[in-house]
Image (cartoon, helix red, strand yellow):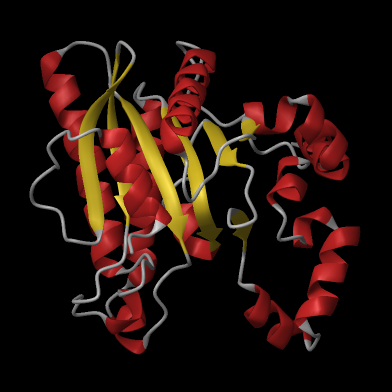
Length: 269
């Protein structure tokens, strides 16, 4: 059975030819969103990967470098063409980065950093970047693939979550039960595994309700496409940074202390 990332990639790419030269764990396609050209990118499982820690959809060495290459190839092609820069759509369903001795020895930090740098550089050069969260968005994998987006859309579904680590791992680290971890999240939104609590922090552009993330149907796919178009239209022509995430009403309510810290740092700088 395909993962959510694989399924949504097929639904949104609508038969568009895949970008060649990428490893099996990274899917890419150049698509149309309305009148806008866009490059769709996803990280998916590869059971035959030579890196055992990256066989279930984790973002590892090959995935980080491949994402960076796909983004930078789009940047170069659009720069040479001299026209409008295509949008980048990060389709996010990643359970985390690949932890392993070989990954650490071969520099997974560099691979992840290469992906981050490519997305940020593309944004700085006028490529609008949007992330669509259809499944897990965990830890360093999300930082490398999706978090550099100017607008992030998440489907309102129990299987869609953003966190530094999974429930079981959080329970072990904090020496709590899984139930106690969930209780802690109810009182502290940053610790919660509910996507609605994450949305309350003001980091999402939109929490999309009424869509079945697992079996969306035509109406669900159309709603997601419309949300992506709205997000792209909302990105200003000269917008290059991520300031929108901390300037909205939800951000000022949900992260008021962070706003105060930033203000005081600006005063003292």
